[in-house]
Structure formats: C-alpha cells, structure tokens
Amino acid sequence: MRPFVYARAEAPEEAFAGTEGGHPAFLAGGTTLLDLMKLDVMRPDRVVDINDLAQEYGAIRIDDRGLELGALVRMSEAAEHPDIVAGYPVIAQSLQLAASTQLRNMATLGGNVLQRTRCAYFRDTSWAACNKRVPGSGCAAMDGVNRKHAVLGTSNACIATYPGDFAQALIALDATVDVAGPAGRRALPFAELHRAPGDSPEVETALGPHDLITGFRVPALPWARRSLYLKVRDRESYDFALASAAVAVDVEDGLVREARIALGGVATKPWRARQAEAALKGRTLDENAAETAASAAFADAETRDGNAYKPELGRRTLVRALLQAATMRV
Image (tube, rainbow, N blue to C red):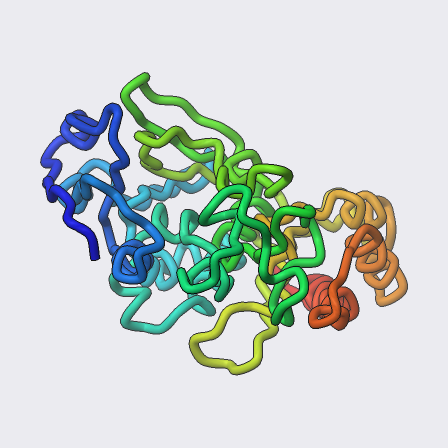
C-alpha cells in the first residue's frame, strides 16, 4: 500500500477541503477501497473518512412521496427495514442477496453502488493489459478467462461486468441520486450515474473526482410493491451474480400498464432493459409474454468463448422473475 494522507470530515464541507487537484478517495465502509489500495490498483493521495457525516446522510425516510435513503445507511439496515421489505421488496432483496452478513453490516449504500469491477485482470496488476486500470493498454479478458464477463454494453476496450445488486433495484424503481461536491449539490437519474465503457472504460460514472454521493430518492410509484430481485450465481452464499433481474410491474385488470426491468451480472453497467419493458406493455403477464420480453432484452448481446452461455441464462432468469412478479399479492 502506498503512502497517503488520512483526514476525517466532521461536517459536509470538510469532506471536500484539500481535495482539489489531488486524487482523493472517500472512506465509509471501506470494504472495496481498502482491498484495492492493498492490491495497488487504487492509489489515492488522500483518504477522507466520512463516517461522521452519518447524522446528515445516514437516515431512512418513508412518506407519501416515496423513499429517501442516506448514502451512509448500512446495507443491513436498509435490507431489514420493515417498510422497505413491505413497500419496496426489490430493494430489500437486492441487499439481502449481496455480500455476507459481516460486509452488509459495514458497507454503505453509497459505497455499494460505486464498487469497482471484480474482473481479475483489473485487480491483478501483474496483468499489464487492462484499459480500465491503464488506459490504452488493451483488455486481457477479451481472449482470456471471460466466463463471468459482460455480454451487454461491451466495447472493444472492455467487457468487465458491473458487480453490484442494489443498483439494479434503483434503476427498476426510477430512483434519483443526490450528489454534493465543491461546485455544489445536484441530483440526477440513477440510470445516468454509471457509464458504459466505450473507448474510455476508466471513466465509470458521471461523478467528478471530488464528488460525493449523499443519498437516493425512490418515488412512490404503483409498481414498487409488485417488485422483486432474482439472482443466479455459482453458489448461494457470498457470490456475485452470473445473471440477475430486478423487475417492477404495474398490473391492472390482468394487463401490464408499466414495467421496469434492470439486469445484473450480464452487463458493463447496471442495465435498463427498455426493449423488454416495451414488449410487456398492454399484455397479460404470462409465460409467452415473459419469453418475448426476455428475448428482446438480450437481442443485442455479444458473447466471447467463455460467456456464450450468458444470454440464455439471462433470458431464463428474467422469465422466472417476471412470472414470480405476476403471482405476487399486493
């Protein structure tokens, strides 16, 4: 681990003090940051501990307008909150199925959505070719071991999979993310936070180098209660998704009025499957409709030798999720 300056922010404005012009990193749960610093993948010159900001950014609020989640809420707290379990089940399930109990007790919601790729070529600095770690160096995963890599949103520069679960739930519920930084505060649709790799896979989000996520807002929409998260992985405990689906559906008189679908484990960023949503609208949510939507979701999939199975697994995962949503009592 390289030398760095440690600072502790006791007020929001202190989080940004002294960060201009450097390479800072914010420390909350730290479950990803510290690992990557030890691996020499991330090299911040200043680490700012923001845990003391939990009084302002660590609350859960639910009212008629929807759900507000502070960025410093711990994953376990949100996963077990009875009003989230009942009113926003896709959020609770996405958190319950992530990591281990110990990590959920430490990790924050803000840090969770910003966790870095789990691609072995990114995390192992003995591999020189990683455009995300060293721009312009190539992508060793293209012709390497790529069984867990992405089939949607890929480019010639990167096929690394976004590893999280919670982000898919936020996209499915049309959430927004609140951001603070030296230039002030702003909000943006959560679906615009992460970026596909394109020619610049090292640029992963719309955040500036000194920006801090402060919270998330989820509107009170009709499909929030009829929502769920389905995750398929190699092992049931503490593993990342090979394919996952966050679905939220508004059904009236047996027909789908609105549908929201986000896919995980198969894409380079949290993936909104808009073509699949359009395929469901106005239809009875039965197996035929679910299969049509699933086919639309993976129509543009691009595979490599190791991950050629993923489109089929992703389609089956989405079909299961949609049919389970159709039988929910809300």
